[in-house]
Length: 242
Length: 371
Image: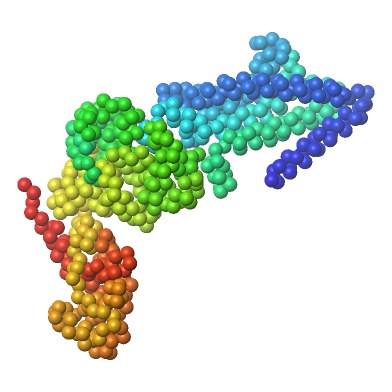
């Protein structure tokens, strides 16, 4: 509950800051961006993040699960290790590498975001399956559930919330990383922030950064709800107890 | 029902986990696989439902080679309960128990009815527990649900891998008694793995003692205790085998049914007369409904004229199903050398004395050696 109040107040502060700067009309010699510009950029930003996270999930979830399967376990170390190392590379570097490889433009921005966003998704998908108590799987096998039945009836429901958490973390990170997309020809709120940076005008930076932060908080909150909704009832109680 | 014929398991790395093990378990028998850790008992059990493939040898279930059957169909007809239970945390108790019935496509109503029935059998209130989740249960309750789930589709065979290994000693005794009681009713063929000799003696109709992958002795508990085949068995059984043997015998087998009694409301003179007749120095005191009330000894006779006034009231009793070790323990702590055996409404069924316990053990130790 407290957690909700903090998030909500933060959101109010960020949105008020945005509104305030926008209503100023002029900062020093620069004109502030209009509400129309803001909405357009925010929407573009969201779309870019959305597409990138969808791509990252479509690749990351199956990949993370696949390396837990017998026979493919050997690939777990390179994949998960690679993901961890990959995440330690600064996002700016990932985006910078993409541009010369794929050319400037929205696609290259989205690919860079997807690659960077895939890492927490793979890791969580892998951990979600590995975290299942082996006794549960042994009991299921011993009772005669087929491999498919174990996956569908046991592993997926138990892994779902953890997988979803990976997608949430990835989304929140990608909203931030997407600020840099404009450097390689993408769009989004980064355009406003960077304009402020080049103009050396803190308030214009704020005009781009504040709504970005607000978007990250909002999406994080919404996806957390989805995560809770996906958590089977019997598992939710564990969270309340412990 | 289950027959192992020279079953051997060698792992790819060359470890020989089980070597040429042969034995058979009759229908309705509870066979304990006993041995120190790493002796191959769990491996042997898991080969029965093909969780571990055999390297050589054959396992017959009802005369059919188990590798010739569809693996999953086979497992659905063999109940499976393990030490860590492995209840599905996202399913209710009812759904957990109905796992195999669902796989077998039973109609919904029958699934629910069966789950309720099994909870009742294991002394859990179906109305309270059907819709609970595993996390809301205590360790002992989870274990019960695990057993209920293994019995879900009424399989003729049950495999249990240290099913009570991870719970506290008091609950464990409860569950052991419960399983024995349930087994009286359902008469399944059970393979029960444990490393605990007390548990083995208590639970097993027969015990297969294993060591280093080999079957050392396969015999009823009394034979294992009193006629060990070799040094290993003797040392595994321990030097206190007579005390362990007390676990094998139930009070109903040694109790004296025509125990001398006197009614609460009678006079001391009558009690004295009866002691003389019976040539004993104690009588069990019962009330008008034959319920056990206490004892009267020859020393008490001088203290008054009514039995009620001079008797020693006692609530220390045991049931006819209690084993002698429990009975003996009660006698030692109560300081009396007789113990009243009563039924569920406290009516006196008989008495157990030190002499009768001693005599029964002598009998067990000096059984005629089998040819």
